[in-house]
Amino acid sequence: MKQKRIVAIIQARMGSTRLSGKVLEKIGEKTILEILINRLKESKFLDEIVVATTINEKDDVIVELSKKMGVKWYRGSEADVLSRYVEAARAFNADIVVRITADNPLTDPNLMDKLIERYLESDADYTYCNDAPLGVSTEIINLSALEKADKNAKSQSEREHVTLYIKSHSEDFKIQKVDSGLDNSDIRLTVDTKEDLELMRKIYENLGDLERLEIRDVVTFLKRNPEIYKINAQVKQKAPNLNMMKPKVSVVIRTHNSSKFVRNAVESALNQTLSKDIYEVLVVDDGSTDNTKEILKTYGNKIRIIEGKELGPIKAVNVGIAYANGDYIILLDSDDIFEPIILKEMYDILEKEKDFAFVYCDYFEKKIEEGETRIVFLRENIFSSVAGGILFRKSILEEIGGYDENFIFSEYDLLIKIMKKYKGRHIPKPLFTYVRHKESLTANQELVKEGIKQLFDKYGKIKALRDY
Image (spheres, rainbow, N blue to C red):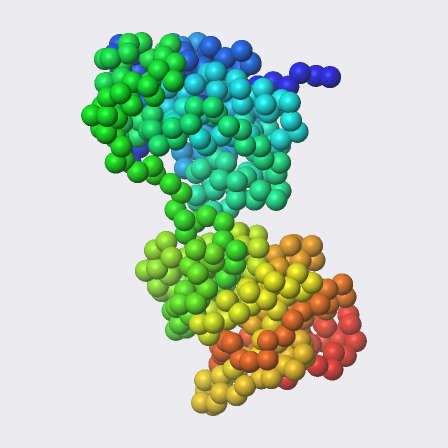
């Protein structure tokens, strides 16, 4: 059997929001990156050490240092760290990646070898520990797991924090947690602030050469010298934005020149009784030329914006589904409005009742020009529903292949295909408002006729089809 190639990949860059250029700060006579590389060279398992930096000119100095240290280097995206890792792993034929960050000069080669050994004894995709002092441990990931994460991770946080997608999708990966035997996870031995750097220099002044320090000796020293331990004790670790972590529900709003209506749609999606921690609002703006984009930008990181270029309404929806992180997806046109309880009521049903592939509700139909609003009672009549009132399991949408972009009324085609194999649950009360106006697709009667003909040609007459 071919022996697996184990490569340590160190992510390193000069840019940092809290301590710029930190990886080349000196502790004694050597930089943080030099100390780290020399500690890694003590490993019994590593076949290669690679420094993965960025294509920015300011990171040329990191490349020069790597050459000086006799280690390989790779240059990739600064923001998309996940892709940088995958590209570096492929470039150096890694089967197994040991993930290391350059601001951890006291990375423990003994603990790293313990994690590698435990990984090799298992069939895990990802091995880690979280009970050691911060900045001491490493993560072990196989290349196929990294590639799967790279293919599927969509959010900024998942692209920036390399293993976040794997941790957030534990059902898709074999994850192994190992006890370090070091404990003291409250001790901070990483360098991300000036306080961290000051602590590290104090350790050097008192214990000497950091390249050969045992972590247990560092822990003992800090416990005996609380005035030094307290130097960085109040520093909070920078964590992924919780709003960008994997949600349970994704609201996908499609827009195109929707400045008259889009604010109401977005507000209704944001003002839900469902906990903000478990749902996201994703807007696919399909090449708007009015001030829709400016309106969307006012929401900052409350929403995710995906830019399209005249994809068309159906393809825009499929793009939204592809980028959605939730286990459940609901679609909202930019001129429609949710009731505040819709997400919670639907989510609770699908979480508890696993037999249902989707849940749908009655709705208000508002005709703006006529000044009329009526309630559409479905009474189990799914084919009178509209997309904004249906919460789907994402896995089912993916299985079906999403919305057929050849159909004008693709939601009906989708529902017919889903209902051949699955069933839905009806909520007998109106939970959103479907808005019809002169700019709506359904105002174009020729297009409506063509859409209905498409469905009839494929499926025969659908008696329950909504009245257009």
